[in-house]
Length: 67
Image (cartoon, rainbow, N blue to C red; front, top):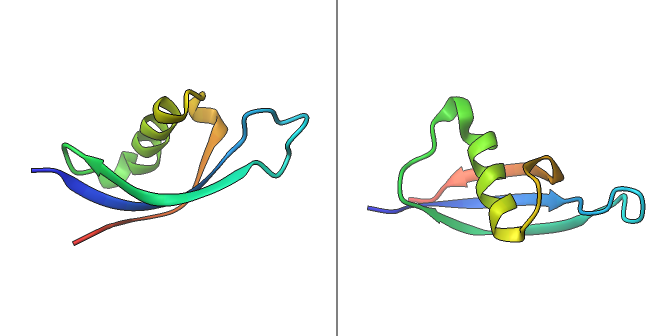
């Protein structure tokens, strides 16, 4: 069963030219629940893959599991 999360994050593709980055929010659906200890790292990796970025270019501002 899939688990859904609300995420609010910013991306930084080119730090030299776009210091502010791009701000995004939305729902992410995962096959397995996030582990509390590694949630930010797991979400950053997933979002980076979706946006074709490095996980260091993603900064999670807020996330919450949807019920």
